[in-house]
Image (cartoon, rainbow, N blue to C red; front, side, top):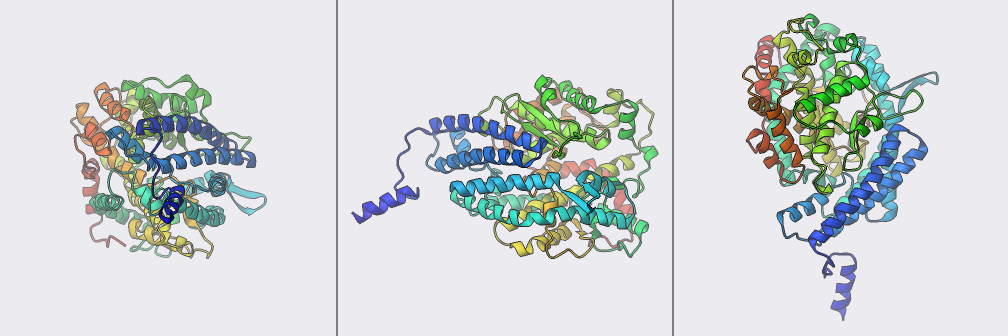
Length: 590
């Protein structure tokens, strides 16, 4: 009797004496795919409304629908452990079900609702945040970003940099609580914590994935150090030893970006000659581009590869321009609202090069969504999340002088481009980003697994930024600072390793597609625009979604199942050689 009572007790908590499932694995998965798609559709609509009309009511609406979806997804993830799966498809879907949520909710209904509300509040606070010197002088993120981008006054830069981080400081307590609740949910799914869960989504053991990232970083670190050395020297020439030294880390407010994640706004300061480069912003304005024409141009790129035109609803439902009458989250994003053909982008488009490139990137997401829309919802994702980001970036690599000429934006021969100028501009964006893309999740994994406690959040953040980026805070940080929260992807709980992987994968994709297209010149001169064989190979991989392990998807385009940085080094080889020569006599590193 005692044994029976114990067995019944354990049965109630799903740890032993499991009841035989009343349905097969296939029936369970079919039902899960159907219901998650339906509930996810409503959660996406609510999130869309909240992101485009930031109010207390829309925040609560989004919170309610996302709580419902999270509760359902968590319940299915817990139940999935009762099934084994008879086919490779069933086994893969059961594994993917465990990673549906980046922040899994605890089974407790009240905690689930608490977590959903906290997440909505964090994102809303970020989207509507303003730095106010006084009640009549408030600036949002866009205005502060413009200062960081354009000003060369170190005091003005420091004020804007510090100002945005006052918006982040109040988020710390709520963020800490979401970590506690998310870890509880992850443990209920059988993971040690959220770090273990996040690293499990890459078709390899979690610990091996972190080692894989370190291996790839070791391949590109020598090149990054040369770029860092060159930029630091130029900043020292501009601002002097009292602002930035000739050795050591670079103060973060001087790098032309609010988070020092890319340095492409320093092109003039580091000696890029505008007369030797294409000014895409100037070309767009001279050709009277508006936001819709910019989107249409990007759409035409994908159509030229043999992909279909976008649904009319895309243009009817997307947000292209910042409204004047309300607060919106301007951070560019792509949406697959119904897991079918309701696809949208949300961004506040400016008529400049950055928006032009970003639109091409975001449509990469959109076309990926459309490519795999016929797959079961659990397969409606990229092979790994780095693939999704890499696809749009791959298209960006084809925004060359030839492409601009092909779309009649640039007259052939009107600009004599210099190879080093062109590659340096690119490296300030893509190569400078790599260590930032790596350290974001390294910080989060340490927070999630407890190695970094709340009192250490900020110090650990800057320790990693110095270790990987060679960047430091420009002044002593306040005791209550929460500088990680000043980066959208932290309060929004968007995993970030995908961006590091994307910056590696895009060059692998680009090299392989250029070979398919028959390109024979330098890799940085290749554009696959209007090449249907390259488009066919790319679209075939996109259609796979998450149905196969990522090494198989990678091989479908590149012929190799291993990620590596050799294509990136090949792309920038002339620049790397030039930097080494320029840095002779300098003490590189930090």
